[in-house]
Length: 280
Ligand code: FDP
Ligand code: ZN
Picture 1 (cartoon, rainbow, N blue to C red):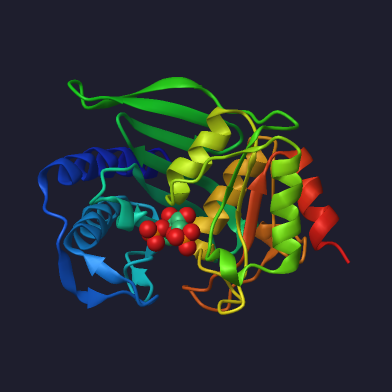
Picture 2: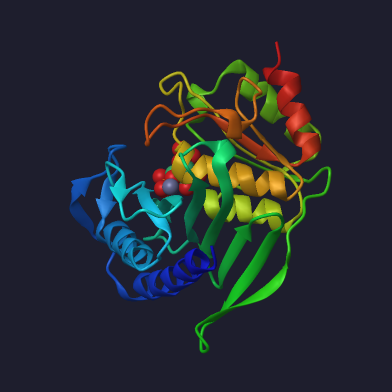
């Protein structure tokens, strides 16, 4: 696994450079989700693919920006990744990120053995979860990540982030959000999953939700590329990640690489509020 983490670090440094350097124009192509790809989405995808190609123990990779599975060898690990999450925020200079899930055998939540994400903000930070959740910061001159601290959630936080088109929210979701605001929670939503979840982890509590809507029952966030890795990180940090049916996110079985699911990530107390409104 050391080689995998080194490839992620190297990719993060190269992507941070690409964000500083490149134009943010659209390419001619769309990904499997119908998103119009930026030139930068494709470049970040290529950077990560190239770095993973030199890792010896990989069987293959799957990316939000690629339609199918890319076989790389006979190794035991599989990696799913989102090369540039929040690409609609690149042109307005808000933080974006990369997300990684590392699996054995099959792309199932229960097979996730490590996960990681990188935030490209005013600083570049890397978070890796194996048994514990560890945060590192890039020292730009040295081109090296330095350990900062372990991330651990308290029982309860004070911030909430909720996505999707509000006029499509269910009654349950409206009541859930109202309960949080009535209880004094503050809204913290940038529209980038990585910085929004990073904020909750660093503030040691709170809740992020991306619900189903009337026009999108399966919501928007992708199980393999976004939802599983963060569910793993939140659980390892002492929090929880559940679906609208209130099952553990990591128990959802995807049928296709690009499947999506409604999801909630939070500290324990806020997930109890989800249970209060989404329970039968
Ligand atoms: P984006 O489309 O900009 O890549 O990956 C999807 C994502 O961003 C997440 O980062 C973010 O949490 C979500 O979409 C925001 O979606 P809404 O605008 O529908 O709330
Ligand atoms: Zn994404």
